[in-house]
Amino acid sequence: MALQWPFLSERISKLGDLFSLKDVKDFTGKFKAEVNLAKGEDSLSSKFLVNGEVRTGEFFGIDKIYQLITLAKEKSNTIAGIRVYYGLAHESFDNKSGESAISTSAIDGADDSSLRPRLFLVAVDETGADIEINLSSLKDVPDGNGLGNGSPQPPFGNG
Image (cartoon, rainbow, N blue to C red):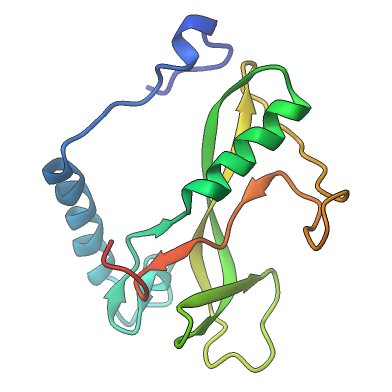
């Protein structure tokens, strides 16, 4: 059973468990096996199949994670942690640079702008609320609270 907010403040920063890389690979291997069962079906599981490979995760650079934490700390005195949201986004890839673009609507000119699973990181306060961060004062950065558009694994990386 999932724990409910509010957590005791001394417990918040300790949520989560460390797992061996072997265990993580076991968990993700089971995920891959389940998704592979959905090949050819029009289901949520099939959206994890990208060019015949199962999408298993997404990589975010440490500088961007620090930026999210720093901005959240400026907005709220107490950042308790990071929540990872699952989402579906239209995506497009630049195979030369290894970068992706995501959008809430189909992307013009993309080879395949299907909805695909993507991860979004949001800072959370001690009450369990997402911390709203207004980024409008930063040049070329839209309003928002979260970090998204990491590097999907696959097609990039070996996650």
